[in-house]
Figure 1: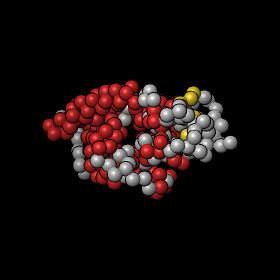
Figure 2 (figure 1 turned 120 degrees about the vertical axis):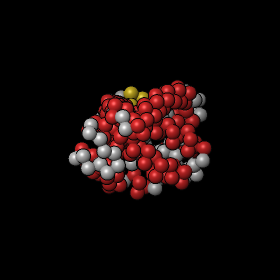
Figure 3 (figure 1 turned 90 degrees about the vertical axis):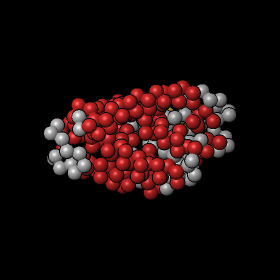
Figure 4 (figure 1 turned 30 degrees about the vertical axis):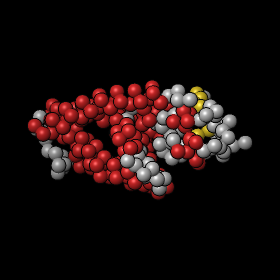
Length: 240
């Protein structure tokens, strides 16, 4: 029924192209030690944080599914080589998410204290921007890609600090995925980027997992239209 896939792909690739241009400019700043270009890194992280936070309280992790440049890269590039094994439950635990977020926070504080061993600049904003670019590259190469090949392409998204913050803010979101008419054919199980549909089909009226980023792959894959997005401030989550 593919209602959303083409629209979503266009939005994703547009976001990826814009972000890539900003990213290249930031890398140029690092290579040439030009503080002005260094600070472009802040634009990238600012867009991610602002976009995610503004949308999360209403649409949940919509940013992750439609606009995140790294998520788009993982989905379309690693999707071709990934083994697509189930994401280990321990990577979804609150403890692990807090662990990753804590490491990022400590590294960020080191930058603010001007103790950054990797990028030193007279301009604190430039130092922060350079650090952000470094973190994006390091986590992608060392964590996102290896895990994306072994497990699901977007395994990183299950414990991404920005995504975790969005999931916390999305408890009162109005966008939901209704599966009340689901026949449990399990077609959506193989389509779900976050490997969560299997925990809900046949058991619940809606998919309310905090890691769901409204990609609507389950909606597009459903032959009878049982999986569908709905807008509602209140939703009954229990099964019949």
